[in-house]
Length: 99
Figure 1: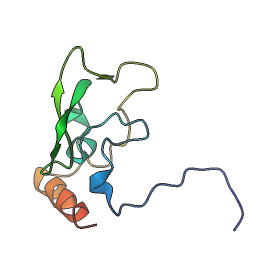
Figure 2: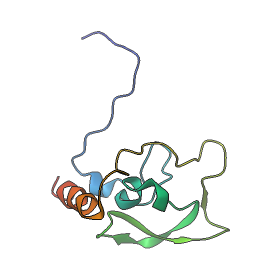
Figure 3: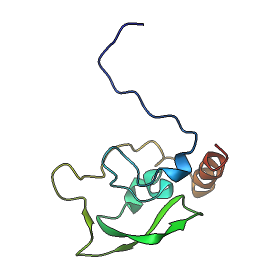
């Protein structure tokens, strides 16, 4: 194998334990990752795991710990789940829980 330019994505096994998501940790749950319009702009992680949505429970706050409007902290891009229905999104999340 020859080294090349590019990004090697991490494996999906154990993805349930790797929240928050995206390269910069800007998305608190897999549900929000798969539905970009629901991603919070400012949020603060709570100390409880959200088993249904796979990620950290959070509260949206104007004084949130994580502000996606700051340079390098954005949560845009990766729109691959937006075309899924709510049922399809839930099915993907349920499958990822098994890895």
